[in-house]
Image (cartoon, rainbow, N blue to C red):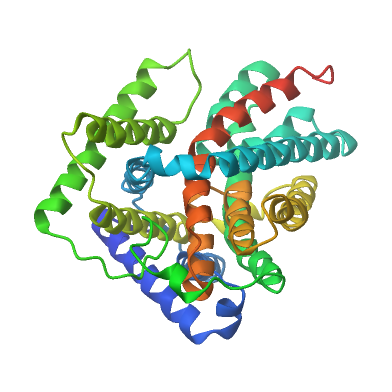
Length: 397
């Protein structure tokens, strides 16, 4: 066993990002299919570590104590970047996209429960391989897994849900780019003048953003307030509202930004927010992907792998034939489809990375970066909880 401490893990995550950037630069297929840099670098490292384990019987263990704070910092920056006045511009589009997202949740659970029942598995297993793990992610999987263990006696539920969420995280980062590439043939690239001006927080991570030390410290303080308040609200809401901590962190960020602005006390400096947000996003994804235990995914039973394979194909087809068409059949719709693949199978950070890979190459999409963070990080968890509870009311359980 080779154990890396927290500092060594952070160094490794930084190197993963540099490796990923270089791989995308020198590998035409990765550029062609718009594979995000953290996904490229993280998966290569995870594959290498799996080979080392099989060949030399050496396990590498990372200290991922900073992984969750990095994820929460990312969601804090999402909330702090949500200017409600700007969100009004995408009000109708947000509603339509939320309707599209809700449709996928129903389909994922329908596929999961239907296939699980047909394969002789407990129907709740299908929910774990449905919207709980895929659209919900690791946090939702752990929460519902413990519930299923108590309710249905499924002692393996949490581990199974987390494994499915890990599978989705990988596939969500891999299929978004190819889906976008397919759709790009059907749309016009945005005009050069559309790229002008300050990009939104996560829209162009490569853009140079002049900031000062004081603005960076002020923004860091706001992020830390969001994390502190988010944890406190999670503890207060236990047993009342079942929402992951990151949802509360994002909610606090939205209130903090817009409350301070309404009172005239402080205006969030978006450039500093963008820098810290993109750093948190990149480091979280690199850490999450490089520490994947791929051999555990290979231990998923064949029926579960079959269900997840069907779910992946369904996500790609839904993005192409539903998300893209309903959202307008234009460039913004193509970027939204790539983002939907990210959080429809994995998580909101994956969705943002997918969209960044597309917009870095083809041009800005203000609408997509306005809609996806709010729907993918906030509204989807509320709608998902409702859909899951409706499926649990079916007489098959």
